[in-house]
Image (cartoon, rainbow, N blue to C red; front, side, top):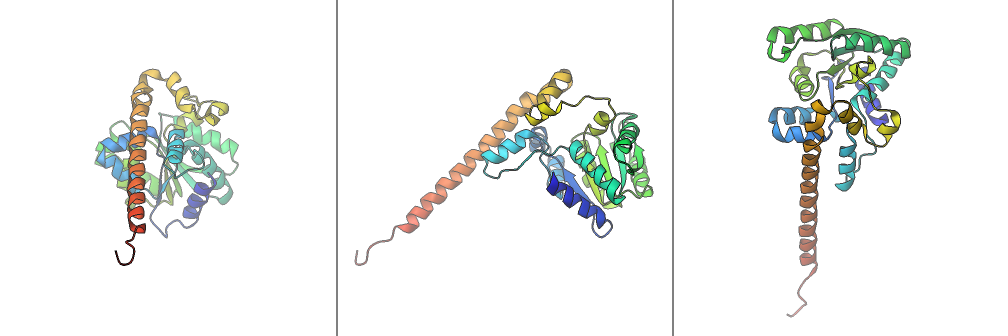
Length: 258
């Protein structure tokens, strides 16, 4: 969390000198989705910063010998950056979420962080991603608000693809996908208690709250993610074995005169 916060804060402090910093939050669902959707995979790979939104990614990183220290959800990072925004005077724009969620989330966060400047909120209509007029309107609203940090809550993969396709026309310092964070901040959706989050079982809590909507994501999806990780683990072990064999062959040299 600290590392991501520092990087994004630096990008906001130097807004305008570089293109917007884009952040993504890979989890098991997004990894499996990227395997099937080239457009989404391209958007994920093009991001400047990836923070692990799911405990499964943290666990997989340890198995694959590239350990990530902790999980950092988009909602948690958004709140931390709102705290930084209240301190530095950054302007924040909330885009997306359920109807009415962004203004209510802004109200609640302003009450928590004195001086927080949420300079605009907007919830696009359904199908906006296929409407050039609406897409232009969104960009105009964000740019007119002179936002430093843009938080996008369209849900995956829509939010990541929109970020990648529009970043070049947005005059902001950083763009952060936040999923359902506006909805939970507004009290329209429940988030798991802290002790469940610490156990890494927030996915199970969400599944229990919305089984009909999420069962396909978490049950077949998690099994698919595990299979992908095991395949990668097997490839790495095979590569290690081949390297060890080459090193052993190179160490054996014929004795002089033979």
